[in-house]
Length: 506
Ligand code: ATR
View 1 (cartoon, rainbow, N blue to C red):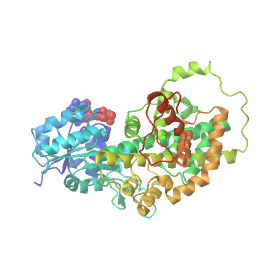
View 2: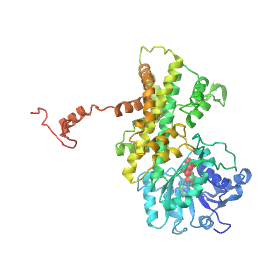
View 3: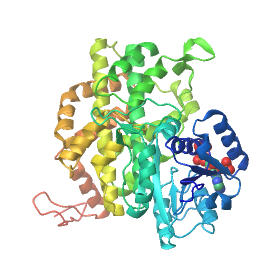
View 4: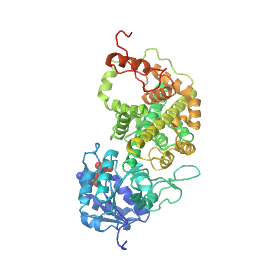
């Protein structure tokens, strides 16, 4: 490259874009930046000059053509613009930005979409751009603001050739994990990049594979969060525990099998006071109505489309929907009564332990569902996914980072063709060890009228999956009765269809 040229360019200076730029600059890369609204670019550059040790490596451009000219060939241009397209033919800001770039860039240049794009759109864009002679990568970027700044988990999908060009930069800026403990290095400091350890990025697969895996990561994130919320509600409603006391419990859990980012932040949140009234706990003043941006819904829709039972992940989405109808719930709470004879719960220590086990077993089921989805998607879309590697890059940077993921990596290392995570010897043993407590917690919740959709649906998944016989025999008989949908017989080979003339079979 010419000495004054940039190593890479980035378009879209919202929160994620700005932080990724700084991360790349910290690692010694010169980065050209552009934003549709120029004032945002200027404000960012000014802020860099005042606060960032790596500011000299960030160059802002007001004109797209100057931005493009400033980047060394083959150009690498990262997009972090708003993505809304869901169906393959939808067009959004990502497409508009690409359309603006095409007259200015050269064949062989690489466009990298780092936004939360839907994998369908990514498949379409990859095909269009590859046909036209360009390279395209759709990369999941997980870890929120801090992740983007100091080390995200990066899930790129696209051609191997395109990945080869991007790899050094992506490997440099991704989160790093201590290979001995499987724990991420989190000793962040501006301008001082973390360079040792195993990097949390790998080539996920062709075209939309990276964005698909990122989406499933988010689906798992939904259920991970919901499980923690159910544990919280049980401690609150059945044991009358206060936030600070619960914080201590989560803090202890974070030392063990549940060690994870989400348990860690829950520990912090529960000891936080209301900033405007120090006599109140922060969680108690936060309205119980959850928002969502759609990736959990996409995960569940994909599960429904492919016919993969991912009920716990879907329940986590529905739990958010139910939370959102706050006014309706408040009105209903005055009309609909719960169970009459709830008994005070005894044995606090034992129940806390049981809640821990319920959370842990449900989490195993949730991850099993997420990995089943990816396994089916690779058939559906012709990808070749390496599940051990995927679990490995989830260990650092991303929101679901957890000690637990090391065990998933080990499970797939032992058996790359593992049919379901629950069947791995380690996870099987854990489910067997925890199930009594899991059942106790779900029963108690049901008897006391405390909703635990994630705990309960995960348990139903476990019980359904381990059942040689489910009642679909009757169901199929019903279908044959009213719709002549035929049935198979237990004493005949699969695929052979029978039908009887209802209502009076001979
Ligand atoms: P966040 O949720 O973090 O705010 P986002 O809404 O996903 O981010 O993305 C916002 C970015 O997309 C901004 O850089 C925005 O540019 P502006 O600052 O000019 O608004 C960019 N963006 C949104 N729509 C765009 C479009 N049609 N063309 C180009 N850039 C667009």
